[in-house]
Length: 395
Picture 1 (tube, rainbow, N blue to C red):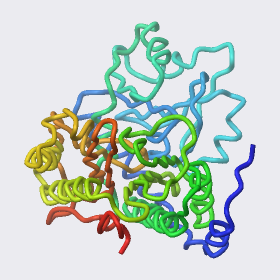
Picture 2: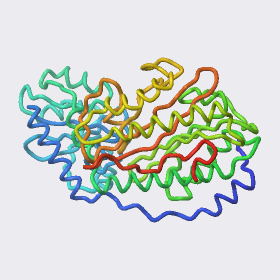
Picture 3: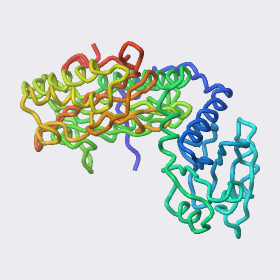
Picture 4: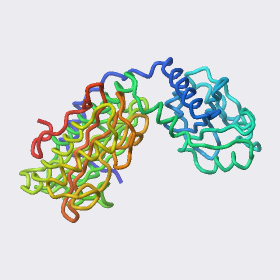
């Protein structure tokens, strides 16, 4: 069943003009990423890296390929040339999609692709395996008894964690577009709108600005539903004095945006405003704690200290913050570093992550303000300016 949009929403969509086309990652940057991965492999004593379809394969090669039961993967030896393993019938498609001069080695349907990978490695070699690959591929490699497996997470995170200027520019444009969509949503809200209508509007607005696939995700929550971090099933209708939470993002050339705004529709409720101000204080305290050399858990602690001072928490106790303060972003919407107790990742210039210390009052409401930062030599820089107030979030 189609959802009809009000004329005000349609007029707002018609007024959108496409943003300038984003600049792609330079080809020589992919080569530098592969070299960095080789260095990290050598330091860890691993012979090669195996990357399956997904964010990491696209990060290292530019190839956007869908994961399936048929193994398509990049093999990156410490010594020797990288090559792609793929089904023979997909070779023509993959070769036309590749931007880099990477050799392709094929396997037919009756053959074992794991054997093709193992044959390229020295006996008893340690293979760093992409943690996002399904377990069945690990068991296929283990069954051969020719390689030892290790997690490739330290290598992948060691490369993807520090964003280049080209990467941060893509993230910046995606974030700016999504913030512009948030502003449009705020301006077209009227009583009686459904969450479905708003989600459709957000998707179409992202598309009109230049995000080819529209919204990569979208959560729209009203009233009590805001106390559930990822919402509740079923339709919702906007009431005259509801609290509104919108969390959405898009993808530009493989790089993500992710912004949340919570605000009052109509005159703010005093208790909503009180908790909103605490949320903003916690978000700004986390931002102030960021500097090279500190750890993810230090930033999380700064936010939780503010909440405890206001009688919220401690730790994950509710009312309070039920989850981590933030997550890394880039080629994946959630990636290292994680801003959470126990994460001792040392922050370094170029790391990008969210600050979103949501406050939940069970059975009543929740407030989440989410913006992202990039770590700099001096501390941190916002990709998007934090919200101003519960009544005027974009002033």
